[in-house]
Image (cartoon, rainbow, N blue to C red; front, side, top):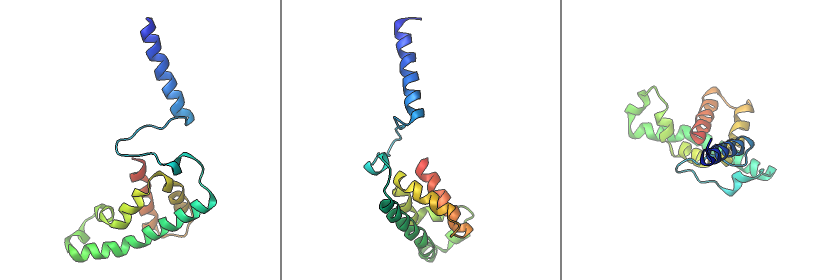
Length: 129
């Protein structure tokens, strides 16, 4: 094997090891790493994030009602697009990776109905995509 090939293989192995051990994060277009996501969140930060997540989720249904008043045809849709279009859902997703722990805790809390849990799961998927 030539020296250039060995160097390329070594670099690939190094990057894979860094990704596996958490020393590096994959770069996704349009996603900025925030300071909050780089270290452990304090209990106060987590409680504040959970409160924000709960507020966003609680406002999705009123946002949907407003959306359906403006365009009644949307109420007949069988997909999740109307939920994605609500300002509250967009705000929830915009909270990004710092909100993932709070979203997961809300899902696991058992305090929400099936619809709300599904909305939280959808937000988690949108954030991690």
